[in-house]
Length: 115
Image (cartoon, rainbow, N blue to C red):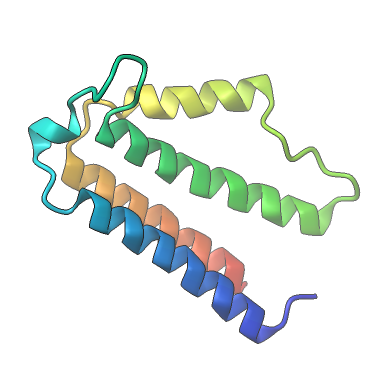
C-alpha cells in the first residue's frame, strides 16, 4: 500500500516532468515545432503527442497492476498502433493545442494517482 507522502511525491514528480517539458518547448515557434530535426526523428509536436499518449497509457497500466494478478503491462501490437496513430494524427496540430492536451493528460494522471 502506498502512503500519503509517497503519493504526494509521485504527484510532484509527475508535475515536475511536465514542467520540464514545458520549459524545453518554451520559445519554440510554431514552424520550429513542426520541423523534422533529422530524418527518422520526431518533431516537437509529435514528441508532445507521444508524451500525452504515454501518460494515459501507463497510468492505465499502473491501475491494472493494482487490480489484476500477473497483468499484461507491455504494449500489445494494437496498443503500439494506437501510440503511432496518436503521434501521426496529431502531427499537424498546433503547438498550443498539444501543450493543452499534454497538461490535461498530466492533470488526469495526477488525479488518478491520488484516487
